[in-house]
Image 1 (cartoon, rainbow, N blue to C red):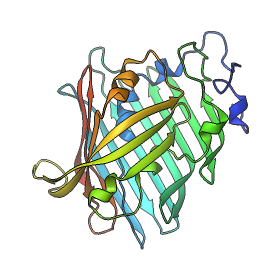
Image 2: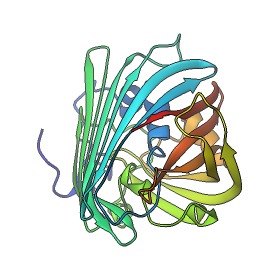
Image 3: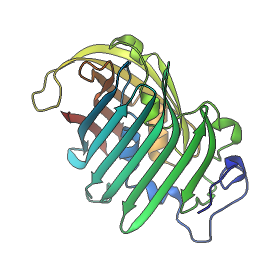
Image 4: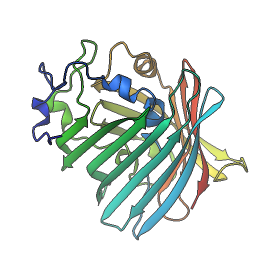
Length: 286
């Protein structure tokens, strides 16, 4: 697996293909985990911190009334650099998802506007098959990325172009920025490249709210943001999930403060899908 130093010259960034005959497409490889990864995009929030910060947050993922995954996030910030990690166990539910694991790591620098990724690694494992993505960023531009197994160029997949890989971030680092727990949290646009897909998420303020459930990991004030998903490239034009999410504001996230650190994290995330509501709720915070 060789690093791709010029990502725009590789498969699916033009008309050429780097995939061996018979290789599975990323839609097949990522299908069991896509709902989780869509939520994972939103799982660490926004805020400010002047001193070293570390936290572990646990979430439960529910699809159509069935618990399909448990996820644990770990975050550390020393004031100059940060690390984020996700470990998730996915349980198979009929034909909705397949059982497996997902692991994600993000590392980079803390800036005046939030977190800026230098590296992003993703691993999914299901049915004995691994799918990995490694992305390197330099000053918010994609420097290289590696996908294994390589991607098949399908006619219904929108190719990623070089110009679309500038001014982007990974999907974990994109959701930590600086600001108070108020409506300004929702005045935000995230430009994301996952190694497979390039999309924007446009936040808008919905309302002030209060989390009251004693069964969750937090009770207190929260801010509700509605999010517009805008697919740019790398997605499939025939994808029901992509087309459904792009139609209107189908993503909601409630942000809560991370103790007294100045950071906020999602308390709850909700997506409406044809398979039912897909939700993730904070269950423990350390």
